[in-house]
Length: 303
Ligand code: ATP
Image (cartoon, rainbow, N blue to C red; front, side, top):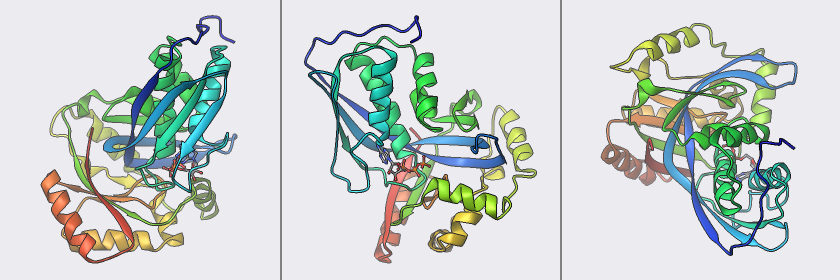
């Protein structure tokens, strides 16, 4: 136990609601496999306004309870919200309990970081509910122990760069003014991130980042006229598409509608297209829905 961490006492009856936003990756370069079997990444996260709602209710003793109506979300100690609460209890020597209710809006196993964002929202919310008084830096440190994308969501930033496994987060002040609108299309399938990385290694790193990181660095050096189309890239797209050809179909459909900036997010299968306004995203979504494909479609934007 770190001596600088406060100990928590638990008195008030209270409930806290926290929104857990999703993300898309505007850039995802898998650099190399590490000795611990994780991969070093260079990624650009974009937080979007599609969100789960996490309700945290103080309950007696130190019980942690997870409630969620979504059948693919675990309710036991493998839930990332459970892990976040347990970690906080242990690190802060806290005897409080919590009931965590997850209203799931973010598609599960889609490459949109839903579980990670739920965990970050739980850390942020419990820090208040249990009066742990942890700094953002301490929360970021805990986040890194739960999962690679959790730290990004602690910062509450619209954009950031993820390095190492993704848990080392760099702010991107040059993107402060950038606001993007997306049409987001999610085929109804659950993609396992570990499986995609395993296949990526098997196929000997199908899409090597090569010059893409150089191009990204060049783009990030610019302070104005930031041009995302120069660097949109995802190392995992080729692998996921080989296993789930529907991802390619989604990309082709969006291209048929005249979109130029189309990319898979994370390990997929979610695909996003950058559009010029929310209105355009909504209109495109309506057209796409008429085609009756088994896809979830969202008009979303940076938040
Ligand atoms: P990642 O790339 O980090 O695996 P993802 O966005 O592709 O993330 P998630 O929606 O986070 O996928 O779900 C991945 C797996 O995490 C699910 O299959 C589920 O079993 C598990 N999981 C644990 N906690 C949660 C949670 N709170 N919400 C959703 N899934 C969760």
